[in-house]
Image (tube, rainbow, N blue to C red; front, side, top):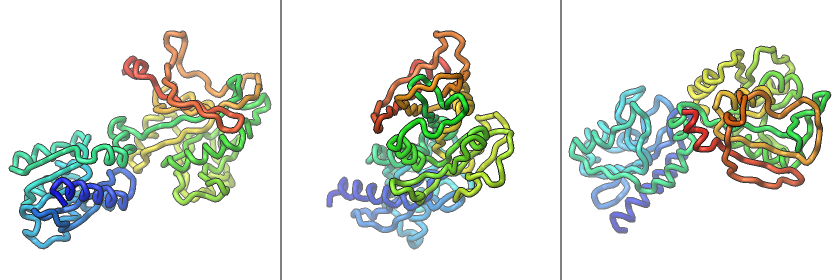
Length: 345
């Protein structure tokens, strides 16, 4: 195996190792230490907040001095700050590693700079090996670093004339089985499902994710309820596999900051019109899912309420990412358009 082949194989292995670590506040990172002739000396991965980072985990498996002249292959640029653990860049320098190859740069303001520090110490440092694979692995975590908060998807179901419920408030079910199956699939991809107290009181949702067979999927999103009204003691959400989180205040930025501290990276907002409108009005929706059923309801129960638009020039412009047919229903997936984001900035 050539040097380049050994390096690529080591990075693929590091990506596999990274997946062993938990998703959360810290990124999933894997590391492989290679001897000068390309043999694997040690492997490591990050096991969660407060535990040794992947590079240090790998180095800990070697005898003192065994890493001298070796190459460290890491999925993320070695960190350059002291938090619960010390800088990985310093650990690699002190271990005598001669070369470091990493996939993608650390976007953190405090944690970045490891590459420069190691180069200044005389190490050969290369970036970009299997960068696309590492970016895909850390997509959610990288998005949190860019946004400074969890990624937010706002979902609603509506009639063709834009209503979320009939005049008497009934709303189950506007859409058909195929659309509801798709919602459960997307719930399962989220870390948290967020609803308002109005939805809890009106629909008593379980806020669980279920598979095609109706059984709960293994990894359930955390249920989050926002609103000042009390949630009944016998509400279905209180029987969720995870303990529900309750927030009284209307400060959505504070709610998202709290969720980020808990390691939540992907938030799925799906109830009801008041809460969806609040996220849209605050500019906190990174993705919109509109499930549209071919029914007409009329009346005043709109799927989306006041989002702060007084004139057409202030309209929240979206870019349609996809349109799919789900049985008789349509799903429109849209994101804030770049021009709208630039205007907001």
